[in-house]
Length: 108
Image (cartoon, rainbow, N blue to C red; front, side, top):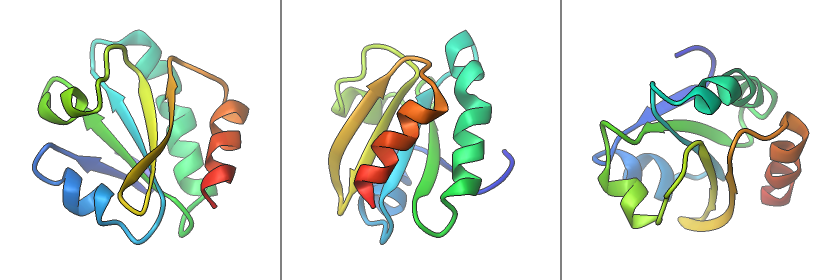
């Protein structure tokens, strides 16, 4: 994975995301998901654009099914924003970079 994107799993989710000092954006994805692959470069770009301000992470729903279940994720890609350990926003589907950036700006 390029850039500043952190890979998280069910085991590392709490430490990496919920206990993060920075607001976080988590991309819930799977390798077989076309729309997930479509937004992956956008997610990586945002990890560069917001380096030091927002932690960007990816969680593979096939390898870590527990966490998506806890957040009621029914479709992927789903992007969830967390701040201070709480879910503050959610975007489902392959959306534009501008749409995701709008949500990120609310975190800051």
